[in-house]
Image (cartoon, rainbow, N blue to C red; front, side):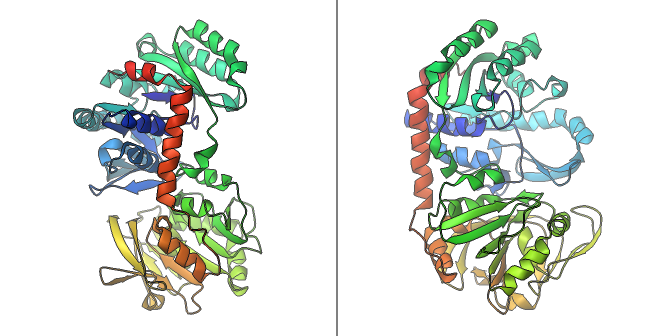
Length: 477
């Protein structure tokens, strides 16, 4: 189990690289994360949803994503509460205190999923969440040491040296752990080192001396990390090229399923801007994307608070294009109604009025993989739906796509404002090239999925070169 000295130390990437390296050694390997908190979810083959990071790790293992790989997924809806998804299916919405009361029952589901994976594979590599040093949350824990102790899994602690203070992070974590939790730690590794790793030799030796833990190496910064699907929406903005065609994505407060943007970030002919709160939509934007949201009505309020509604109207008047995906599609309509209070207080919120459609929220969530035809280009692509709500209206007479003979999505009369519930469409190289060409942009012809595979192999090479992989595999039991 890879645990971290904090959030965003690179645990997801480490697990993906270790999974690919183990697979290349002939092992049947699977990823596992007991509890994840993310609105970036993947639809699984067994009809559920898991964190997008675990789907990427499954790819590294050569497996289809399965709900057992992430048995508890928390999807924040507000600052106080989140949806609780258990083994792929929505169970309840809970505030933090309420969730703490659910944890004992959830541990049973977590162990069931872990044991099924363990029985089916030679090796399971587990990703922790946050930090085990948060000992105030240790009671009822299912994400870090609580799981490790219950499942008998050895822990390797990863620290992020790029943040600074990694020696104190390691030594401090050991100091606050209980004797029982400390006994699960098999060693440590250092991640994200820039420059000559030998410069950290003294620090590395100090950690070993102060903790008594085995060191598994110092991993230098992996330059191609941006080519892998991002777990955090703001990580997508790190693509190192600036092309002539400008795509702007609005970073909503509850942005969800933003994997649609990863392939666009890799197009060298594009500039992709992830627009943050308080920033105006640039006047040179060619395409503005309204992404998915875990709280459509709440994010309509957030969008208006930034003045983006005014900017969007000006963008359309200038002849710019707009694409709303899932929650973004709902926002483009005339109104969003939630009579049952599914996403918050019951009521309705005016939409942006850029599409002549209306949405009604309904309790049943649609979770499905689909194959669709983009009607404007005739391109087929694989995608997925993950949403609540039904949308209809006059602009649906101009559908965006067709699935098994059924029209999907809507386009306004000018053809410049489009909405669809379909996620994952830009992963398809042919569709992406044709769609961009229709907007006046040029695709470079990159093969996105092949590029991800190549990058996973490069990550495994990187890990093999710098970490003690035989030592890491030897501690597994």
